[in-house]
Image (cartoon, rainbow, N blue to C red):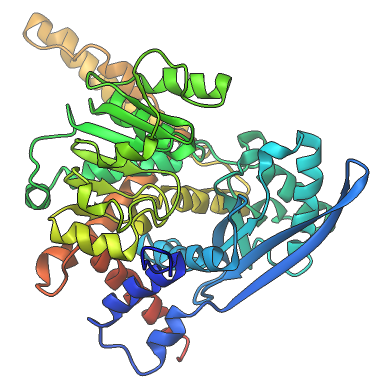
Length: 476
């Protein structure tokens, strides 16, 4: 427990799981089997750097093997510890079940600040960490499939995939050992944006249901909604960019590690992202008012709050001051169990992390399938689709010519309709379908059961039910 008498991240997850299980009729012992983390591997390895041996500590937790392989990211951060990776592995189990990705839950981490090391040094560290995991089948296309997380990206995944293939030279499915790789290294289009895009699709689906909006005292559409976002990394950047550019939402606050930005008229997300890339932070950006205490933006007046960085940023110390009516958890565990109770009492609606940020694992699933099938999506059907569309357009053109000015095709219809779906369009379609379906699975339970107080509990009920069904099918 912290000074605020808050449960740890792992304890918060257990509390929320316990609340859901209390509403279920699970056989004796099955609930405990689902809840506990199956195993956690701790590795301490040395790498000779800058004239001396540096020792690093890493983890890989496997929460549930009700389905295999297990799936979950690897993060690079100084705060990585066993409690954190086990909590994140548990969330991965429930997240995969909720969106029907056929995986168990896993998570990994390395206690390192990537900014402390040159690229060639980081590659050596990554390859040695990967080696330690690979030789224990904790990176394996059929058993354990990592992905990027905080502090890692497609570069690190490419190094890990290459390390696996060096150690398993005859494994034709080797590229499927990790996801989130660069497109020219076995990756898939749309993976980099996937988690942020999933946040957008989640909000779009929420705003399709007037009764759900009413719970948050909201109406209308996303157009004009005032949003504060905490963390402009990969997830936060893409979510903010898509919501502002495609849905008309207004990003009025951005909180980053070196401070925050505020502009009631809206902030240019791309310009801020470019500024961070050039200067390492938001300080010095001239298109908005700089705020020294970025944490203050979490309690600023807005319609929607999107915590997209670290866990536990909304806790007992600030939850009562939150003014947003809707929170969507783009990060893992940004709201503690104690804060969750406070916010529910205030009538704040929370779209939970295990659903809201599931876009990443969903598109990782698509990438894994692509690697195993050894063919990119769209390659077999795109031109056939275009040929069928051409037949219809030719008939419409004949009608157009016959009727003259009394009827004509809408401008650009022909160009848009004739273009067959490529990999990116298919990935986005599959992601949107997944996010819409999972939302309704979760929201139906929320709406229909009088004993389910919020979307988070509903999400756990759906996902735990699916995990329980998997174990029952195995004879447990």
